[in-house]
Each structure stands twice: as structure tokens, then as C-alpha cells.
Length: 286
Image 1: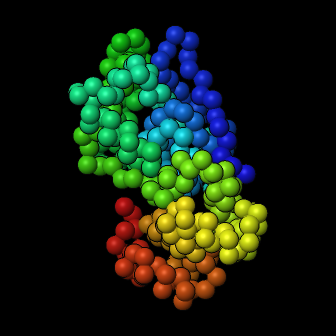
Image 2: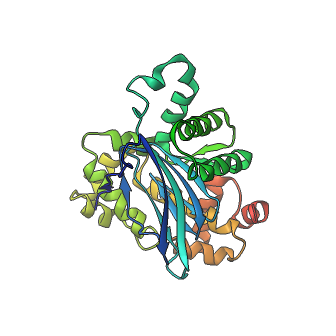
């Protein structure tokens, strides 16, 4: 199933929106995209955040800036119950201040930020705290002051060193490909099943191709083999689990979709340069 195109509803007589989304128990978890840029602050709950081909853990305070048309979703952990899940979300179109606004010289740095956001950006450090505070204030102000607040947020983000890109360039390039529907079906399948037995044969069937033809197709679109993509996805998820310090390495191995502990250790060290245990000791609690 390909990501769903969502129409973001703008308030009457407004050029951008700030909405607080509250869900009893869980976020909907719909794999979707839209024309608007999005800044999402998680206020309550935890789980897995998927942006493009990146899978990461999220908790309260998580702040992510997502470019237009980049598929994304937040999914709560299946084994946990939540009193509610809550997020504050800012949406705006790239022409909300006029079709050429971001092309003026004074907005050059912000224009570069918007370009980076097409891979998704996680905001950390002091910048996260400052932007979160401004975003919360935006709920209470109106008119030109609200617009100034939005520009202040963009200026803070554009000047920050506390930003890290999420999705791979190969994924973004493949989304922009006119024939990306087939690849989107593959990404959706893998995102939903990477913890299970995801074989080349099964994925090729999703794409309605032979395994050999699919291997060539995938590498031509993403510039990496499907096997490499799947391993990187699993290792990325394993890294986030190891940071929680609540699981043994063996538990993380199987939770991430590996069937063999020795293979997990080998693949993890190849990609990160560290053994899983050393990675956990270095990063747990951060």
C-alpha cells in the first residue's frame, strides 16, 4: 500500500496552521504525505517514528521538521497502552508568504533549511527547547505576531547546528521519481514487516517483479542493494533499542528482525564500527 496523500485543513483566513492533536490511546499511525511542510512536537506518548526510510524511537519532547511530500508516520508501541497520545503540529505551504518569498536574499539560509527538510530533520539540543517553547506560544497568539513567531522558528532552525537529517538521499530521489508508486509499495511493506522474515522473494512479489528484476530496479532507484537497505533499517532500529538500556543484546537482535545473534553482531559492527554491547554502554541513557 502506497503512502496516503493527506489534505491538511487550514483555518479560515489563515495562511498556516498550528494544531494540537489529541488521541485517546494511540496515534493513528497512517503512512502519509502532503504538500505542506510540517513541524511536529510530541507532547505525550512514545513509539516508533518513520520518516522516509528512517525508523527511530520517539518520546515526549521529540521535535521533527518534515519537508513537503516526504512520507512519514508515528506509531505507538503495540505492547503498551497509553492514556492518550498528543502532539502539537505546525503546517505551512512553501508559498504561504507569496510565491517568491523564500527566494529573496534575506531568506537564503531558510531556503537551504527547507531543502534539507526533504529528507526530514530531527531537532535536538538547545534548539529543540527554544523551538518547542515558541511553538507552544503560537497557540496563544494571533495575527502578525503569529507570523513573526513562525519566521523566528524558521530562523532558529536555519542557524542551528542541532539538526540531523533522517531519511537517505536515495529514498528522497526515489520518491521524486515519476515511477515511484511501485517503490512506495515496497517501502510500506518493509516498514510494516522488517521485524519479521522479509525475503527478497516476498518483496519482489509486492513489486510484481521477479527477484532478479526487482534487485536491479531497487538498486537503480536507491543506489544500494535491497539487502543492504534492509540491514541498515534493522541496525538503525536496533541502535534506538540499545539506547533504552532496558533490553539485552540478544533481545534487541530478535526484536530488530535478525534471526541469528552472531550475524547481528557482525552486521552491527560492520555498519557502526562497534559491537552492540559497546554501543549500548556508550549511548544508553542519552
